[in-house]
Length: 395
Ligand SMILES: *Cc1c(COP(=O)(O)O)cnc(C)c1O
Image 1 (cartoon, rainbow, N blue to C red):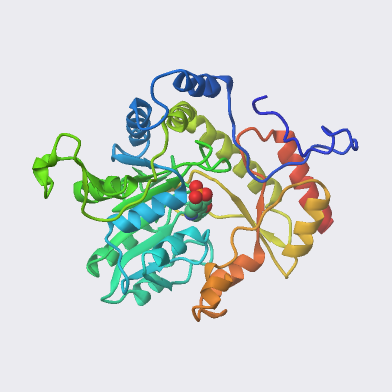
Image 2 (cartoon, protein in one colour):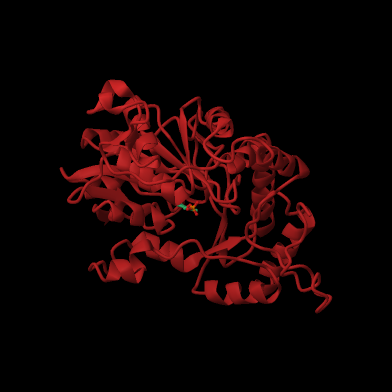
């Protein structure tokens, strides 16, 4: 049933009369979405048909008209974007540690050396000064993250990347539908990536996209999505092989998002503005209700940012984050922590990265607690979360 309580709700399972478990994020799927998917299932194409082209065109309407390449996940989008940027062993990618591991892992999988630069203490976004200090002549990409849905300092980061002969990649897994200084997310960086995982701002179950205004980057992204197969006779090395012939010039993978899921994406995009509006309302309701609670900081927004809030990152002071996490989980409130600094993962520890590298990111992590935020959260749900926080602080 669409928009119903999660099955793990204790009340739904008949185990107790306590209120339903509130997850920190949750998809909104309507009967209209389901009809769009079943229509494709009954048609001739299940994958790589007209629904892909349609979804890419629909997405472009939300990214300032910049063309899109639909792929199978936000992780695939990053892997494709770094491939399009031509990342090779020995290249350096400067990025934020305040992100999901995929932002860095996909660069490392291309053989890049990942250089973590610290974040701004207030937004948790990549610091312009730290990124500038981290750039070298080997830097090929500066990868910013729109943490929680708040756009990074995209103009300053683009300038410092371009001055160094590098590209700006924006991991906009959190921020589809947002804008910065009046320009849509997707129309600013050289390459922008999205995720359509169910907790994100719109969903295709699993899915993602790369958007870029650069024709060459777009062509390379499309190539990597589909094994690097070249079908255009004009650029084939062996065009006379026969009508069946297609050939590979550079390795790629199969990251094609199927028609079935693209149909869901197109249907979801019709409600993206509505989702964003409701997320903004909930964000504001938390801000107002928690403003006077001593012991927490509510998330700021910078001038010129029109965030598409994916997370509500509360900051819990005086080392009380873990206790508040346990308190709220005990009340059936599915808070989350986003994110452990990426270089704390053992895979980076084993490569020699050490704690202490990015003090702002580490301080942010130690305070961060994501409160539930998704469009079908009611005002009463929000008030329940607020009461949970206030009861912890006896506020
Ligand atoms: C979710 C997310 C990803 C990965 O997206 P998937 O669709 O889950 O593969 C990458 N970066 C950030 C910042 C994310 O939040």
